[in-house]
Image (cartoon, rainbow, N blue to C red; front, side):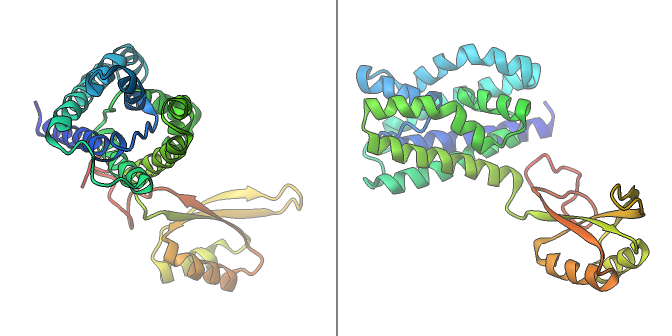
Amino acid sequence: MKLAQVRDYAIIFVGAMMQAACMVLFLIPAQLAAGGMSGAALIVNKFTGWPIGMMVLAGNLPLFWLGWRYLGGRRFLIRTVFASVVFSVGLDSLTLLLPRAGLTHDLLLNALYGGVIGGIGSGLVIRAQGTSGGTEILARLLSLRYGISLSQSYLYTDSVVVMVAGLAFSWEQALYAIIALYVWGVATDLFLEGSDVARTATIVTEQPEAVARHIMDELARGITAWPGTGLYSGRNKQVLFCVVSRAEVAQLKAIIHEADPQAFVVIGVAHEALGEGFKPLSGAHRLP
């Protein structure tokens, strides 16, 4: 096994154990079924007393095929099974080792801390090219198929579990479970994409040389250009594209206005920028 693979499995182990710990310390004591196979298992546990971890593992078995078929074949299956086993065994083991009452009785604190720690754990597992199984597989399929974010995918796939939890526990706990579910998804997105969001600028101008020269001289950012034609005016123009940091947006707009007051500018959001002037592309799919 290569060193990179060993590193990936170590990351998956840490991420799965973080998810197990957040369940034992925050979500299970507060009876917050924040979606997923673990949330469904928590509901069943209330009426049967069966071990939650083993129910999660059993419930994941039918979903492994979907992951193998659509999310990466054999490599995906091995890593997902590994993550699922670590999570399930870790959950039942930590239940015996950690206080059953958790760390706090405050439902909001349990929802927030459970969501953050669980989301970071999910991010670690996904960053290492695996999943924890369960509805996470369905969420990734939705994200892949329809291009929606993971946070939205989790809301779609886990809403039924939360509704049933409202009937099994209480609607107040179901409402806090929704908070935990949302925070979990957002924490996963932030961990995977980072909080250092870049800005993209698309500039339509009749003074491309002047605009590009000012941006390159004053911001030291690269520019890509391609020809364009205004269909309303019929005039030929150049379309410039560049990526800057959030702190440089105001300066960029001032530079463009100075070089060509008639320019048309669209500022967009880039969740991640890789390459010269930003994070290196090499190894970007792995943890630093």
